[in-house]
Image 1 (cartoon, rainbow, N blue to C red):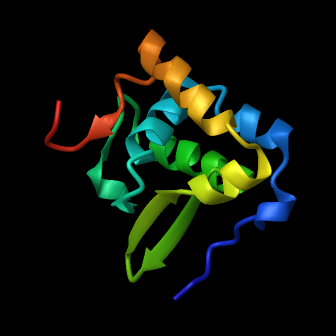
Image 2: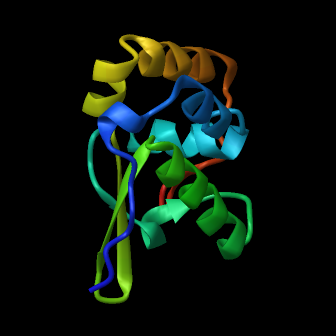
Length: 114
């Protein structure tokens, strides 16, 4: 099984995290993952092509916002809340609260749910 590279918690940078969260689809993905559950990529619904969704997930992973785990042919993703909160206290909650209040990322959800 191929190991997917992730930055360590100490390697997270504010600029990379903010850049990753600068897109409505990526904010929506963070909102969906904010429940702390690991999700299979197939569970995620977004108004973009699968290749574009894959790109958004890679941007989040490369910035350290999410952690991806590959199991056979399936990929799973989880929000790195503890690492983000330790490195940038309150940042993630502020972004998610503001996004929720403005409806940013509302178009992203879980397959089978509206």
